[in-house]
Image 1 (spheres, helix red, strand yellow):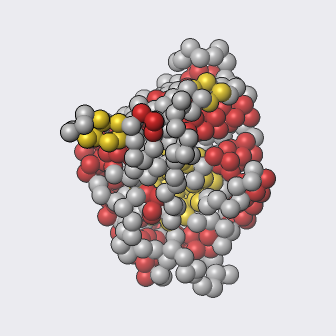
Image 2 (cartoon, helix red, strand yellow; image 1 turned 135 degrees about the vertical axis):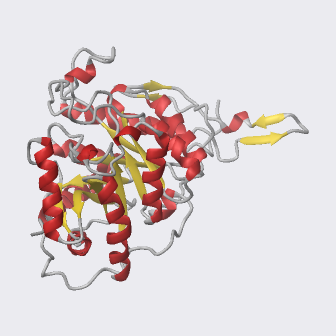
Image 3 (cartoon, one colour; image 1 turned 30 degrees about the vertical axis):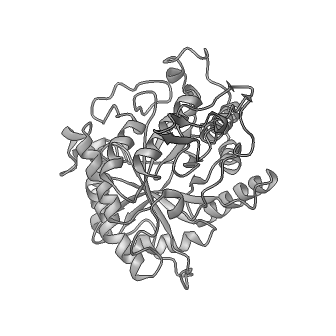
Amino acid sequence: MSAFPPASAFTSASSEALHLAVALDGAGWHPAAWREPGARPGELFTARYWADAVAEAEAGLLDFVTFEDALALQSSSADGPDGRTDQVRGRLDAVLTAARVAPLTRHIGLVPAVTATHTEPFHISKAIATLDHVSRGRAGLRIQVSQLAHETRHFGRRAVPLPDAESYEEAADHIEVIRRLWDSWDDDAEIRDVATGRFVDRDKLHYIDFEGRHFSVRGPSITPRPPQGQPVVTAASAADALGDGSAAYGLIARSTDVGYVAVRDADGARAAVAEIRQARESAGLAAQPLHLFADLTVFLDEDAPAADARRSRLDALAGAPYSSDTAIFTGTSAQLADLLQDWRTAGLSGFRLRPGVIARDLPAITRGLVPELQRRGVFRRAYEADTLRGLLGLERPGGRYAAHPAA
């Protein structure tokens, strides 16, 4: 049986199209995914593997892909490396992977994960601005926090992890600095006039003069303003949240364009949406658009028993039943479409699907789920924009310093 039977209460789909993304991590989100036929474990650290995965997602007309990353080895223990040798360990750098894939794609958004806790916003701002230039306006950023002691020991910034709330306050400052740096060049700051010898108008580069509890950054950036003006900033509510979930909700509400919520059912989604919307209203940002996606781990097959059998086989290889901070769906594309249409009534605008096995479940999403949603009239049949902001219906913002010349 499917983990989620079709919702009997669902009556009709909204005329507004769903947004869909996939979260790419190694061979897939199940720890035994690398042992599945076709998983290509020998290629996990090659550009071709990632290029192929993103090409499949783009063929399915998905809005964007996210690339998982962290500053410590994957582990089943929060206390440090678990010493396991039967699961995938190690990742390529997410930002660099996205930049390598960018010239090979044309429409899909590219959203690498970055840990704000141990990185400098100046470096991240120019890395994502560069990705936006390389992709011609398809870059995003997934900000995450870390409170792992063993990860903290990889860096010299502090002796112990920050408390939960303070970690998210630091992440909010990190995003604010990044956003200001993206605006520190006016759109027309580059003159490039060979005849006069003027390449840049210095009056159109601006100091940001950010002074906060966690960062002090003068600016300007060394990278011209990104094609999107502001690449899309995203954050998750559970996979990165090691403590009070409301802290992550607050970060999503105040600082992002897209938030991912890890919930178990439609009621959980409804509660998360309400809390985030309330926090956004309290911050005076209710009029500004915010997309909320539910995270969902999926195992798809031609019928529900086959999907259940495959997940059970993977569990046996891993030595334990698979668990996740998200709901786990096991069933057919049509059953998943029923679920997505049901859950969207909670106020969600989209879903970020985590393929249990990329080799099996990513094609099942693009070649099974997407056509099913198209038949129901709730998913695009062609890309309608050339930028990630455009795909998400977000306007390109003007630069905040454009009317204030630099001193």
